[in-house]
Each structure stands twice: as C-alpha cells, then as structure tokens.
Length: 264
Image (cartoon, rainbow, N blue to C red; front, side, top):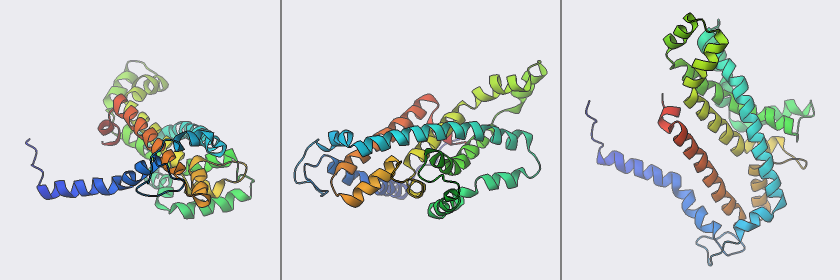
C-alpha cells in the first residue's frame, strides 16, 4: 500500500509544535552556560562555573541520590506488582476485570495536586510524611497505573497459541510464563521500566506534599532553590536532567525500539 504524501500544512503544523515544545530548551541551555550571578537571557557573559557548582551543593547531591534510589525502588515494585496484576486481568480475566482495570488507572484521571492532598491527609495519620517509605508508596500510586496499562497491552498483543503449544508439550504454567511469555514481553517490560523510572524521578507535586526537612527529592530541591535564589544553577541542572532523559530514551530505542515498545 502506497503511503499518502504529507501535505505542506501538516508539515508546518508539526514543525510549529516541535518548536513550541523545544522552546524552553532554547532559553535554558544558554542560561546554563551563563557567567552571571543571576538568571538573565541572553547572558551577558559565558562560563561553565554552574556545572561544578551543582556537585558542590550538598543539598542537590543528597536529593539526587534520594531521587535515584527512590526511582529504582519504585520501578522494581511497579514491575513486581504490575506484572501479576496485568497477567490476571488479561489472561485470567476474572469477573469484573474491566471495572478493576478502570479502578487501577483511576489515579491518572485525578489532578496531581488533589491526589497529593489526599495522600497527605491519609499518610499524616500513620507517620509516613517526610519518610522514604511514604515517598515510595506515594509514587507507586502514580507509577502503578502506567505499569499495569503498558504490561496489559503487551500481554494482550502476544500470540496465545505459542503459549498453548508449550503447555501441550508438558511445560508447567510457571515454565511457560518464564520461558515463553516473559521473553516475548521484552519490549513491554523495557518500556514499563523506563516509564516508571522517569515518572518517579521527575515527580514534583506529590513529592512536595511528602517531603520535609529530613528528606527531599531532586525536583523538590530545585523548586526550593528557585524560591530562594535566582542563579543559573537550576538551569545547568535542568540540562543534565534532559541529557539523562535522552540517555534513557536511547537505551530503550537501542534495546527494543521506541515504536515497538510504546506503539502497539
């Protein structure tokens, strides 16, 4: 089937949207190399001093390691919980599976600030505020719907006859799942891992409700830094985070391909 030619108007519209989405980078990247003591665009002088200043800031480095560990733990738990849940919804199809699927994805429909306020009210009763455990549970509320949705989609597109053939040859259900189902879900698992990691690492609204003097994540530390100071340090850190995100996307693309991972 021949592909339809793309009209000039559609190309211009796509170009406009790309420019709109990348416009913040056009401002942030030059500011990150500013030699000024405050944010100004365009900078009056150029310097690399703000990049070493990030690593010299104890609050930023501590918040970075907290966010990294938090994202890792949340991602692992999202996979451990989301995979069995997705398998049960898609393969076992219990009564009311559609209602349960809608319930699992319901947190994505709520404004994050409303969700954060509700979590704050509930967690304050159990002493989970400003604790690592509380942050993990709060982030799971957001990452689990993504994990279940992506994994369920990956399972639904797998060829069931291959699993049935393995079962008829004497393989146990666990062996079929481990040797057949999981390898075929490789792209979905990689996509879920990347998505949950980035969502947890970049989450700021829920973290604002859950953090305190004892513990802080990197997005929250950046938010408070901008409140107190207007130097280009946050711009330099933002550039590094964009590079980190691009690295994650490149890893996904190299391992399984972006189209194969997220487009079904």
